[in-house]
Image (tube, rainbow, N blue to C red; front, side):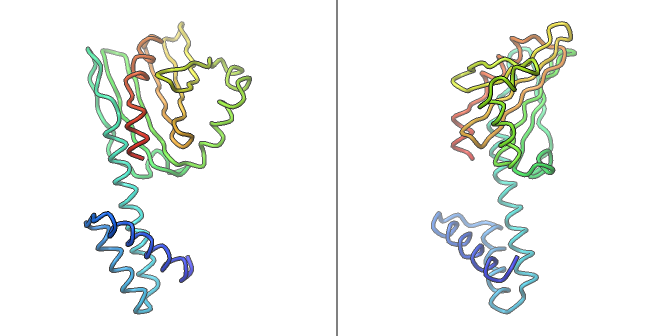
Length: 197
């Protein structure tokens, strides 16, 4: 990252937080980065900006985690440990995940936001023949376009939903009915996710 990018990023980030009146460790680190930049310590300025960026990703991840639904009746839930770039490390973006259990049945809901990987997934939604070629069915769930794949003989399946063109929601089920998967897909608060992210 060259000097111009460092100062530009620092000024934008600090301005955003000062305008909102939101003071925390992120603003402190950004202020330190600005001081280091002015003192010619470009390496530390860059390191601090990258650290601040990671903290912001973690805050975004925390909000995504809060948007995952509570367990439905008869189910229990367990959230994954926060990983700002964990599941999405190889494909970029921010992720959140939660598992739901009922006896031997497991449903996992995952969210990946702002990943370049989403462009390839969008192709499935824009070209229905590609989605249905692998056994998927196009459906509308709670007003959202979804690709539903379910194997009754195996009692497993998955649902993929793109929200606002930048957020991928996946549901994977093992030893579940299609109705179980659909019920959890309907339990997701899509409006909340878009306002959070």
